[in-house]
Length: 164
Length: 276
Image (cartoon, rainbow over all chains, first blue to last red; front, side, top):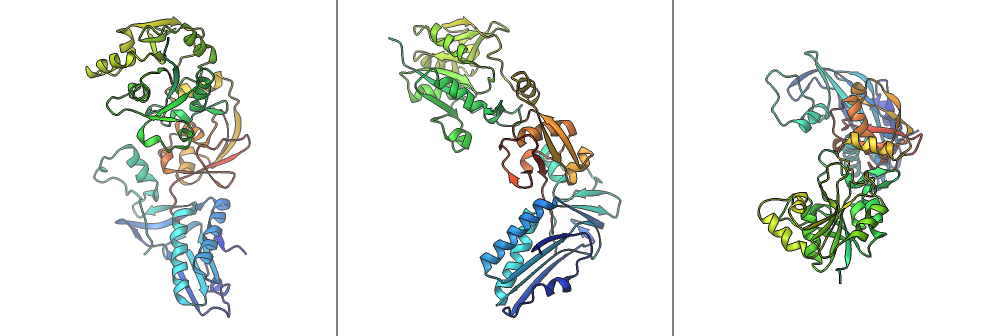
């Protein structure tokens, strides 16, 4: 099965962990990105993820292969959720097993960082006040046209978003 | 004896109204810059391309012998001054890169009609009878006169020609010097030149999907590259994202914005991503 996957159903971390078990490995590291209830001062109600899946899977596979080559880890896996997500849902899961812990931590960090920057996945935030917006797209597009400060009381402007 | 004639393609313009570099626009399969340089090379031994300092490494320009624009003056005179400084003994056949209908006959007629005893030889515009300074021959003696002109704070080479000893010829092809400054003029000219339209499938995601009001469409277009296609669709759907914030994929692989499109290709414009 592919080492980078999209799923429309809840991510089951313990089942995925089982795919990484290997008697050659003495260490396992994982990361979960969760849907949180706020971003840049705005209250978030739920999220919507969308992906260009055929290219996303190719690019995700390349990231996993790079991580294995670069850090010498034994196995690595990343699953990204798409569709509507509720607060507390796991949006992305990364797991790495390796003979030693240091490489596992590093590869895990590398994979989540690269996935966020390279894989064609988009996130729409729906806010408690009823507004919504595509993260990294809408304010940047507005900035490209005008450098004026947003008017007081303007809709929240989704921008860069880091999981905690 | 007349001065040896060298060729100069002006490619350092800002292309502001076109919203993309005019030198790399394609007409019927070749870039404007390549087309202009090839036409000049049929007429003169040596051809140079004038570039801004920040353009010297660009792939479309890097393959040519370059002359970096003078910084003492704005506009096309920057390229002409730099060429005259690079070889003060040569006469320069100067051609703008945004003349998609320029033809060999127009250049050959200009050269045949050249009078080396005048400061310059140019065409009289078929539209308004004024000199056409961006398909013209500048003799070595024009250099000090141009410098004196620029020293008065002016930088329009047409005004220079009107007020100096320029031989004006009639155009053998009245359309040859029509330039193209906007995406609309580009599309009209592409079609007039017989650029075949072809069917491209475009898929939209996220913000672009919402703004296009569809997740995919089939587009009949003369656009030769993803960049040209994006500008066409940006105008059609009022996309808010500029091209330089996007990436592009052709047939489910990341692609270059200037890669030639083929009939049947599937193109995806990729807005800034936000996984995780």
